[in-house]
Picture 1 (tube, rainbow, N blue to C red):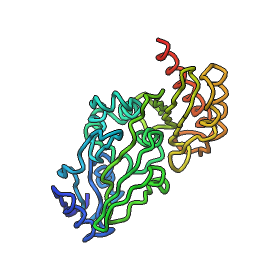
Picture 2: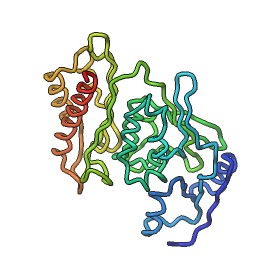
Picture 3: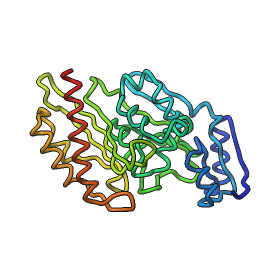
Length: 288
């Protein structure tokens, strides 16, 4: 590993000053589960590294009025252990439970998962269906973007060289909807997703869907919403026939590629199967 200069500020403003001073030449360290491995393997050789781990202003998890706010330094383990998120957003908890092993979950952060911008990032589809927004900050000020506007493509975000992700926020999903996160990888654990899916669905008193949000990862350059399948489900009860029709529809809606981990056809079929499996589980839990 090449020698580098490490900065470890305790204040956010100091970190933003450093980013401005070293604009475009500085790598960001949060949990380090990705960056340190790439540095060790010689894939990246930064001259300067900005360690965020001592900045308390980036480490928070709270509910304010009807919104939930998550700091970028919150780890996956902290998501798993949060009574608030287990109550309000179990699909985000389910997603974080599938990330790596316990060592990775103890170090890896929500902010790092977003800023890596992997199309297969497991925490990202839940934040899509939760209608999350990202707050970005620099010495020039702050801006707030819907999460779908945060990503440009694989490994690419809209973050300027002098900007940091300083918060993720979304409305509390009330009344509590049907929700799930499903994924499939090469193994049952410690595996990058071949396909992952997050689902939120609000129903009326007759059990008909009033509103549906479905997001999938690893089937496009960025996470995508299955808008056509969402629209199909609205106004319908999730019967076996409806679930099958929706599963067939989502297979035609996604536009995956084939790569070293999976084929295009496999990803299409798995997308349909994950929707069918997740809805079937929801139905089983709802009816005891």
